[in-house]
Image (cartoon, rainbow, N blue to C red):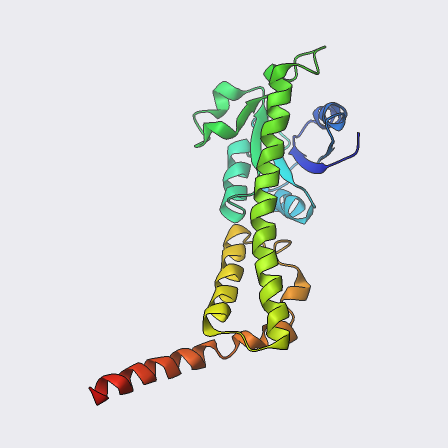
Length: 223
């Protein structure tokens, strides 16, 4: 099957990563793992994650079973959520009972053994799971793409004619929203949209705001 999306899978067991690489491939997902070398810090792991071009992140809950790392899945999820709050991510584990007390949003916890029962790779639970994560990816990408298209449209218009103050404020606000959605600044806004020549139209915002304020003051004085 043609690969539609890429999934990052954080699991200290390389065999588990390989296992689900095979199982997800038939549904159009390319699963990649990360280098969880012994003693790796959470910061070092997250650098790998943020640099990987993925559409969804799966996190095994019990990461410290082999003593490779000193943190568990809820710490990874918390760190990821802090930086990319709406980016699709799930806790994918067979330790659901251990994860639930520590993960705020139970909806992101999925039992890998229950979904992928041995010898049954086409049951209803798998199909529902695949549909769920696919829709999560599509909804997020739709949100981001819509904001990028708005930015592109405004910047393109700004090359040919002067944008109104409202349009300029809209441009600034959309870029702020994208930065909130991804504090790592890695992939949400393409660099070509942020080059100096394209955002010079924003530079006069403060000046225009001051002029508008002065106009209001002058009008009040005349009354």
